[in-house]
Image (cartoon, rainbow, N blue to C red; front, side, top):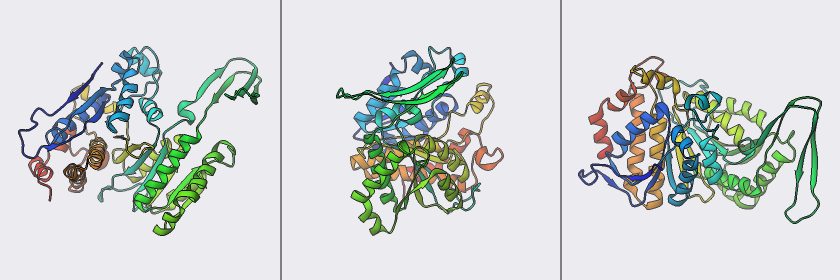
Length: 416
């Protein structure tokens, strides 16, 4: 199994090489993002930071080879070391199963990791002043907190091929009487699904969101469709309200911020009319969809941070919020130049390293991470950007990194 440690080949040879006391879990990925990921690691990270990487190859061929055990192992390693950085990965569909000759249609690695770690995925746009926004009224960032457990992502779904009754049965562990609900009496074929969540997970989600809002000093909104799913979504609403009243209301009042539950349809409309500067707590599926809308509204999926914050407040997994950029990978395979935005992948590294610095009390590592992020934004604002941002080809992937390389290396190694 491809699990090993990596340290920079030039470690100890350069005065500016930052030393790290604890390792970071690295989860490799697929296609174009895998190529960019390796380039970022070698040119920007390992050339400046002396870090031990616990490496896990989450590329689809190796996931298939290990029956997806490598994904589980990477999540368990993240629990142990508390910090992981992840490259974008393929979630296979029927076409991918055929393309890679897979043993089966493996589940989303992100879903597997999140179900093991729990917690909340916080996604926030990277603001560049010169990048026009599809929603011009969004003058300040909006953070989405996506519940990273259960619902559709751990559901049991099936196809019905004949008439019959679909029932749900709950069998109490204490041996008391079963509870049974009839969902639907099928007159012919159709489909069905059963899904769930837990009080423990919803509680952890709530605490993460309230703490994050306090840290940002922004109001928090929680959205559900409790008018339709009175018991299921109502549970989310009730737990959030109870935790807010018992634990966070005084601090919110002190900061002059607020918590409010809203219906998801009303919230979507309100978000489009807002100027930003708030945290939006979403259920798993809502957060999946709305975070992509948010990213595009701010300019690009390539300008979006994504960090999974676990209930312990100590363990995180940082990743790029976009996919593997298959179309560009096909061009790359043909030897043609591409213009793929590397910024979200760079920020996956910086958010992970910054958190490692906070856990280890390493201010130099924190400073390096923040400086590298500033360099990325400054580079775009100086006019050097990829096609998705510029609307026309200004630079290839590697040109983006190498433009003004001496100037930026000086900034990284001798930050003011």
